[in-house]
Length: 289
Image 1 (tube, rainbow, N blue to C red):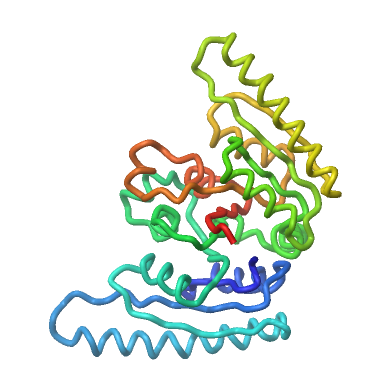
Image 2 (cartoon, rainbow, N blue to C red; image 1 turned 90 degrees about the vertical axis):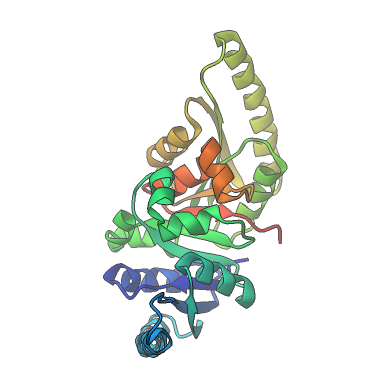
């Protein structure tokens, strides 16, 4: 599922750190290193400037390719540069054309609502409709990828997976995929009952959720997958992030309905809020393969 990974790089120090991490993620066999040159708007000399930027990027990508091959000689590395009106659009177009199963991207720790307004590339990649799964790592995570942190979030990325579920077919699909990942250890199933309703209704919702979660857990046990089930109440995004810390998970594995950016922004999106603010890696599952 994640054999082919697309890594958009801006040639920053954080991007260099991410290369080592990507090389050690289980199942990764092919890595596409991509740099998107944002198309210049001024009329005179625009084409020349863009081509020069592209040629410069190709040289730097070649150095990154050499580094990645030294870290993991078994990985096949290909290089891509493209010129696009917007960076996020170039990333998603390349992911679709290449057949990548996963986009790996770093992100600042800020609300998706702020990110949308500021035109943040990670937020835009998450918001736009796409079939490609996305692994998001906040910059604070990337900066600490050494020692035990590196082991947990890179080669042992799937050792302890938090799977939030709302019992939809999307969530069920994502949970089933999580159990098939190479290196999958324990799955922690989480359902959050939103607060705000009458206490009696909340208690009933919690009881119903506990029964359904138990059934899902039992099904995973039959498949030989170690798991535990949890039900909490509160704001879904906040509870997911809090549970990830309390349970010391290696990754948050969450499904996306694939709604457009404007729709998600207007109603608020648990998926994007978690992806942009969690202190753990977050994989957003959007494919149905």
